[in-house]
Image (cartoon, rainbow, N blue to C red):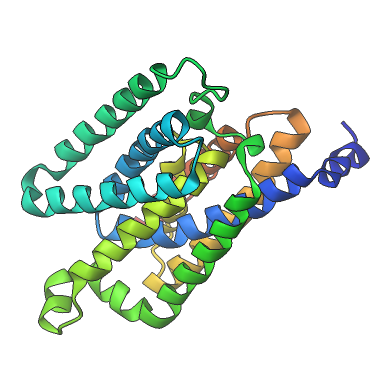
Length: 276
């Protein structure tokens, strides 16, 4: 493929829509994931990715693929997960694992009861640019404004919650409300993101940027900003590679993340060994 042939893809609306939505999803996932990882709540993001598959199954089978039904189910699921985790803190990872596997199984069974379905739910496991619609563009813009506002006006509170929940509680910062808000916004982002990346891969968008920057021992704010930059660069590079070689976009993005993470782990480990 030549450069001109690659650029020719961008005459198609679905490619431009995929680039726009996917880039915003990657950036927002990096921002939310930074707090989830440092709060040791990353497993919730993985659980929500599987619950999103369940919500899509309900939507496709009974409501003609309604995005609003997906968001409603995801919201209810996020509250349920948070309540179960808070009431069973010693078994939170086990609870999330049970919910995640059950959601995949139930979603598949529900969709199997609809013999007239014209859209294969399996496509939501790994995502497809063809699944993105104009509604997704509107929702991702709304989420971008909402999540950006949260970061701009409550960044210090979120940072305090992530590092020391008890300190935040003593200072009347209501960390439980910020945790709920983070989880609900993450569930909404996952619903939009699985159309492009897939439910099995979406959690990687939440985890990898923070995993990569953690190797360099930056401060919290620096890590947050660098994570956003890594998400942007990785998405653009991965998106172009997927077009060039005609590969699934979601899988390509996760592989490029994994390669960058592996390189940073090796480089930082070698540097530490040299100084020891």
